[in-house]
Image 1: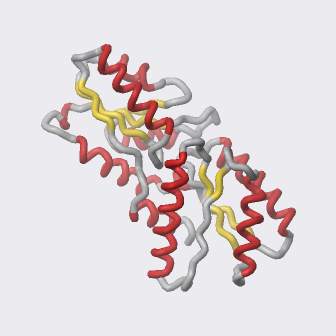
Image 2: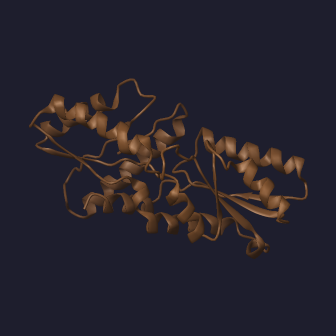
Image 3: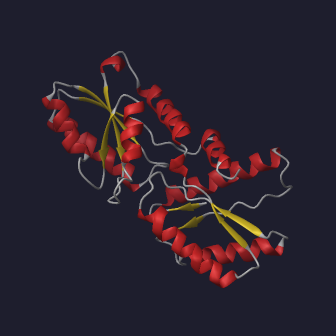
Length: 240
C-alpha cells in the first residue's frame, strides 16, 4: 500500500494498523498462512518509492512470491496517482527485471460507493437535534490536475453536501462565508481524508477560529475515514 507520507507519525501508525487488518482478513480467506502486506510512502521517506518497492520485492521473493500488487491509498486521481507512482514503479521494474511482476491496482478513490458509505457513517455520530438543518461541507485536499476533483463534487452531491478544498479554491473559509451569506448557521465539516494528521488538526483549528469570530455559528467537525474493517474490505476489493 502506497500513501503520500507525512512528518506526523499518526498516519504511518494508522497505515501499519490497516496492514494488520488486511493480513488478518487474508488469513481468514485462506489465501496464505502468512500474507505479506507492506506499506510505502511516496514522499517524506528516507528512500524513494522505487527503492522501497524493490526492498519489499526482495523480501517477498525470499518466501516464494513472484508478484506484488501495489495499491495507491489516494482519494483523488491527481498527479501522484497518474504520474508519480507509475514513474516510480517503472524504475522498480527496471531494477527487478523479470524476477518480480509489479501490478499497479486502481487507487482507493475509485471505490466511490464504498467511500460514500464510510463518509455517511462519519456524519452520524455528530448529528444532533438540528441535524436536519445542518449544511455539510465535504472538505478534500484538492488537486490542480484537470478533472481530478470531479469525484469530490459527485461525493458531495451524493451526501447532499457542498465541496470545498484545503489547497485550492473554493477553500473552507470561502465556502463558510458563502453559507453564512445564504443564512446558514448550523454547519458540518466532513474531512475527506483517510487518517488524522497535521491537515486534519489544522482544519479543526481553523473551524475553531471561525467559530470564535462568528459566535452565532454552530460548526460540527466529523472524523476522517480512519482505520476500520470496512476500509480494509474496500482495499481488498481492489486486489481482485
